[in-house]
Image (cartoon, rainbow, N blue to C red; front, side):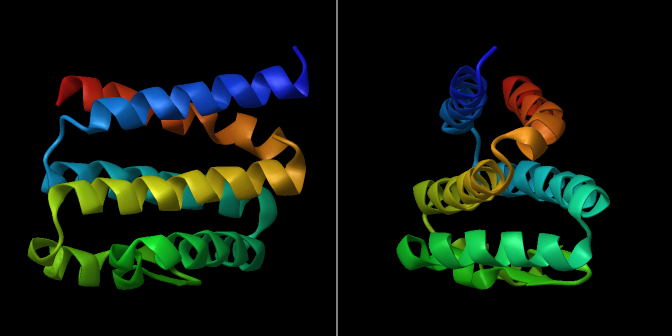
Length: 139
């Protein structure tokens, strides 16, 4: 399988999960993303280390924050991703804004992994994206 086909398959999987997420409520969406992001964080830290992981997630968050104010409520440090401020202010955001912001952030993390490693790291975290899809199907 070529690298391009791998990336297309991975993007298709993520898009399917995102489409299914349109059916979930904003608290459920936040809970699912919280679990996904925590697992992604742990997996990526194990692969590239804490400092590089912080850089990848901060970069992805900065990019998502440009179009999604909700992402400004997310904090990233050496301990991981903190969604506490977002959870406290969740009522301020529309349901569609919660989904769109969290999807953009996750998309940006995936895109950075592809850019940095040509999809090598993304293949290692793909099972987590599959889990997200399964959770959304149950909800």
